[in-house]
Image (cartoon, rainbow over all chains, first blue to last red; front, side):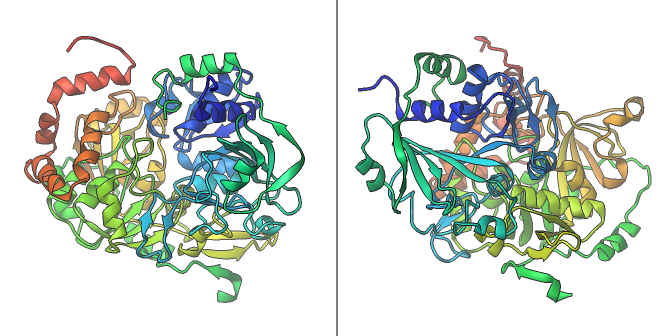
Length: 256
Length: 332
């Protein structure tokens, strides 16, 4: 038994990817916790942005909504949604995090529907919200998610937000900004990146307690593997302390 | 002209993007500096017709004009078009009344970190509503195009995805660089309701905190009603003209509505009533229980004040004010 849970591990790993001085647009939940943790550990000058317009708040608690008062609490700016999205489009936003019901080997994400008839979906989800915008326009896109073979699927029912589309250069050929795209997929089992050429999902490191077989068995498509597979560095004591005491004391996220 | 279009989204465009048609409307819209005080009942009765296309300001459960949204349901407006732009609790209320039959989707049926609205989800999955996909930025820019008085704006999102495929957007090439863009059609809603902190009787508005897309929404919409926490004097507007977020000529009606964003959050005023929003979500699980809930809170109340009373009245509002200011108290 480890002394941390999967959510805590994923948040700690995600936070380490956010360097000081960078910009990141986050939603509610795990991404916000990761950004707050980064800010309270190695990246005090990480600029956290919310799509409704909040920029660089001093977050007193987890927001419930990306537009609620907390998202611009003692902020440097309480702006507008178009301003945040245009800042992304202009190339000034380094990172974002997305979630979704399905993801494929190129990092394309479905948060719209399950079924085949768009007019009468079997299961309807909220849709893009700002997800497609951020996936299209930020430089590096990350996802924090529990991994299973249904969620990691060969063919999503709907591509809400673009990853590398059909792989290779297809993302840029479609007109999406050059050099942008999926960067890290952080799951309870492993950390994935994407192959430089084919743009297929590639395992970089495996989390404590899981095997190569676990990672592949819980994925609905064939994964690529880095030449040297690392062991994921588990959460450090100081990361866990700050996460539990300062970032999410009520365990809204890490208690899930 | 069509040969300049590379691809077209297959779903329906619900509104006319023509800038000259919009100009013809705005030519006739009053720009007189005259008092515009009105009531919720009269505004919804006179400014919204069945079949109109409407939009709601704020961000879902933050700074929303709840009284207007309730009244649309209470007066049983039908067959509306709706801009599902950052919509959460507003969408939930309008779905409860089955008020709209077509929807431009950016974000619907969800309540962000709170989960999904079971009833709104049933409504959408029933197939009763015609759906066209967009995104938050897409609808922001569609409103911005309308606010600018142009029929489209180019942008670089949604390319290559099913979100584009089921939109009504068009893909074009930049005449300067050859770069592919989505051309977003201007969105001119027939009606918009926006909740603000302060307004004078002419409709000059102060908004504090994120303004989301509301400045563009006010400019883009043909008829605009403002509900405001407080009416202030025009003198106060003139003392601080750079604070005017929405100017009077965009506005057709002004209604003083303290606690008007309840149960949503109103920045610097009161926090959201999470208990009551949970009560909505719980009631929605069972259609029969939800009917009772709606009878109690919306159809059985005369107006928004009665709703506030049912939800705990001024005592509850005081509690939410403390929560907004992060003040912990044990006092009951």
